[in-house]
Image 1 (spheres, rainbow over the protein chains, first blue to last red):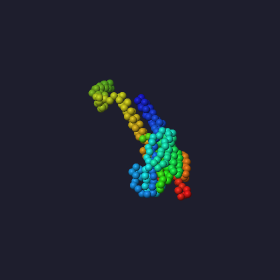
Image 2: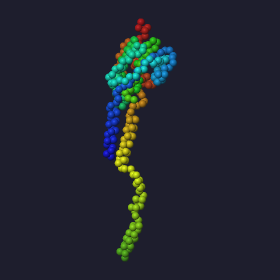
Image 3: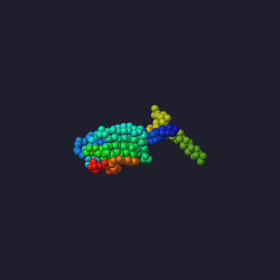
Image 4: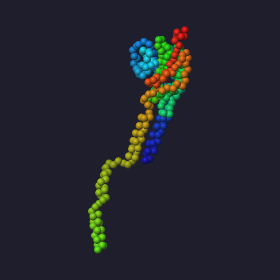
Length: 155
Length: 109
C-alpha cells in the first residue's frame, strides 16, 4: 500500500506539469495565395487548403490559385515578426499568448497585420491551435490575395 | 448400563477420529506453493506501478492534443484602412475570414 503514495504523487505532478506549463513557443505558418479568374493547373502545395476551403464559397468564384509564399516561423510570446512578399505586400504577426480555455482547448492569441497596395488590415484574433484563419480580398492584378494563418504551440 | 454405553460410544468415536486426519485432507486440496515463488515485495511494487503507468498513459492519450483540428476563431480587434471589411464564418469548416472590400479602380476614379 505504501508504494501507491509516491506513484500517485508522481502521476499527479506529471499531470499538473502538463496542464500548467504548456509549450508556449508557437510555430506559425503564414501562406499568401493569389486567387485568379483564369483557369490554371492546381498547385499541389495548396491541395489541403483547396479541398477544405478554396473550392467552396466565397473562394469558389475564383478559378485557380497560386501559392506566392509559404512562411513557417517560430515565435515566443509577445514576439512580432515581419514578412515581405514577392509582390510587395507586407505583413506582420504578433504572437501574444497561448491560452487554454476551461474545456482544455488550446488557443493562440495574436494580431495579424497585412498591408497591400490599396488597403491594410490589423486583426486581433484568438484561434484554435492548428486551426486556420484568413484575411482575403486585397486586389492584385485581376485577382485577389488570400492570407492563411495557422499556429500551433505543441506537436 | 448407561455408563458402559457412553464409554462404548466415546471409544468408537475416538477410534474413528484417529483414522480421519482432517487437516491433512484440507492441506492436500490447497495449491502447492511453486518452488520459485514470487516474492511478496515484487507484487507490492509492480502491480501498482503497472496500474499507475497504464492509467497515466491512458490519461495522456485522452487529454493530450486533440488531433481533430477545429477552426474556431474570435476576432478581438479589427482595424482597416482603404477598404471596408466583412467577417465571414465559413459553413462547413467554421473558418473565419476577414474579407476586405477594396474600392475598385473605376470607383476610385
